[in-house]
Length: 271
Image (cartoon, rainbow, N blue to C red):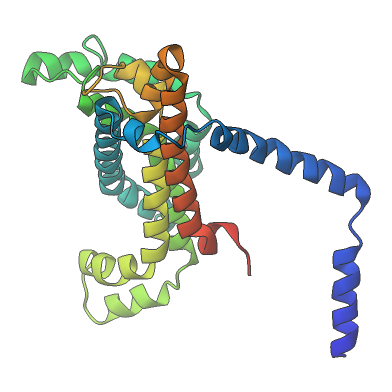
């Protein structure tokens, strides 16, 4: 029986149609070749000096700061939202889930325009914030955080909701039976159960925030030291110094590869 199964497995793996193999190879080349081109054009000889340039370090620090703050904001708002979608039956839940995923398919520039219409000085909430508290979000570092959180939160919500749906609800029922309150059950039972999914969602959320461009430049502008993150610095450098743009792109590529390598067991491979 073992030989039979092994033979079947070998026949199944070796019977790849050529009509599928060729497009698959072309697809792989299409995805990998631009990355190879980036590595080939990287100025390796003076890379340390370029990485130490003040503009690069400033953009990198700002990107790391805003991406981290955006992720914390997403955790604060997204985890309860994911729990609501996974655990509570209410009218219109499918509509709410669809609205949560809209930023995934919405062009980022459109998201930036929408944020301006809501949080701008003449926006639905921005006018009130400015008149009441003197808070103006557009073209500020806080605006960068808001734009990044808007486009990144769906990644966290989807990951946490999926983790919640995959957990055994009997543990939460047992905690409730033993007298634990809803908040205690959530913090001591539910969160530990979904910790791997929560961590993976937070990392993906952080990575998406780090690479955000369209909504950021539309809502927060491109001011060095205040709103110019790494993607915006790449865009600006393309007009003046292509080598600098390559170096900045290499930094973002390295971060992306590290994140994918860390999440490969959960998101890439299959059992």
